Amino acid sequence: MIIPYGKQSITQGDIDAVVNVLKSDFLTQGPTITTFEKNFAEYIGSKYAVAVSNGTAALHLCAMALNVDSNTNVITSPLTFVASANCIRYCGGNVFFADIDPNTLTLDFAKVKDLIASKPKGFFKGIIPVDFAGYPVNLEELKMIADENDLWILEDACHAPGAYFIDNSGVKQNSGNGNFADLSIFSFHPVKHIATGEGGMITTNDDELYKKLLQLRSHGMIYQGNDKLIENHGGWYMEMQELGYNYRLSDIQAALGISQLTKAKDGIIRRNEIAEFYNISFQNTEIQILPKLSNAYHAYHMYVIQISERRELYEKLRQNKIYAQVHYVPVHMMPYYQKLYGLVGSLPVVENYYAKCLSLPMYPTLTKQEQELVISTILKK
Image (cartoon, rainbow, N blue to C red; front, side, top):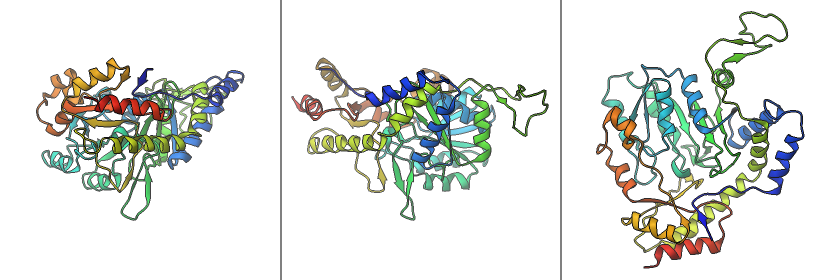
């Protein structure tokens, strides 16, 4: 028996949805894309959704739409996949890391304020919070900081479709709904909640950003019917007015996404059940688990523990064909960013977390028997 840390779940319904598109007139740039975008926007609660080829492409397009350039300084979390920071570097911008909150593993807002205060007014242009492991950042609180300092917010919600926090009015605010962030992005990599093989989505409530994203994801082209056309040579005519990319999603992938989306709510419920069983099992042990916070609903893309003998436990699990994983090597410790900024040793909370963290198997089809094996292997001396 092999137990990975994450795994996609593909049903016959998913297969049928893909086959139907394969038999249709459009394999890409067809109507299935629009349907997927509409359904996803409804699920998240945003006005618009733009499907793209992967989560990294989503981040890159957002950075472009927000006019990031060599004069742009942005704050983000060091506890994320490198793409959250790389998107700013793609556009020539500069990345600054604020340390994390040990209870949520997301940005520590006090550290964010300190970082902003350490620079001249107007130095920073934006902030990229990360809903790490599925825990939703309280964007209402972050937006107050952003508004005070004239910053845009780009939410990396790749781990958190279906997560929400409770705002000051007692209202549920879904990750990615656009009520506080200018833009939010998601990933449909196989280990994520919704799998399309590769794929991503951008959500926003901003009309102008939405139009710009549509243009940038397809070579920077605009087509007939767009009032921004400079010329019009005929029905075939299209214009490339700025440099864009081919970051489109195919109809084949969108069909799989539409089918997967119908099971997303049940998947989140199951992930929370798995997390609760882990929590109960690790009570009164040396395993450090995250505190359960009352003002948020966790999406549990990952279930993370901390333990002093992380390397030993990692190897023991692998010997038993349980493939736990480490998420992540902090971005500021990567050689590329070390050469740029030399920050190793300056962010003690995330560095201490990294020394002890381990992501245990977490996916909706994980069986009770498999989870019990994981737990017993961990606790066995």
